[in-house]
Image (cartoon, rainbow, N blue to C red; front, side):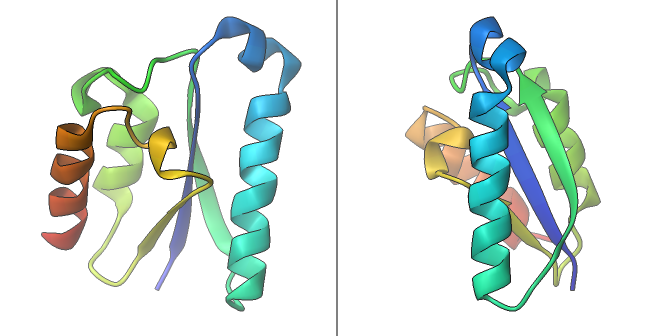
Length: 98
């Protein structure tokens, strides 16, 4: 089993400050630590809206493509995956279908 982290910020200001990404990475690492796990790799989408479909977010696409059946995808908050509930459903189905 491998743990993969996904981080996303939507504004260039968040990208430049690093605060959004750093806070998300810290939250993911803390969660993994509490579960006795270590995150093998992080994938990022910087300056991209959560309303964009998977196809337009290279970091998310790559994270999903690299997930295997027993792997776990960790995000700081569900809205980092998407701001669209239908898209979250698509992502969830893609993960469960591995």
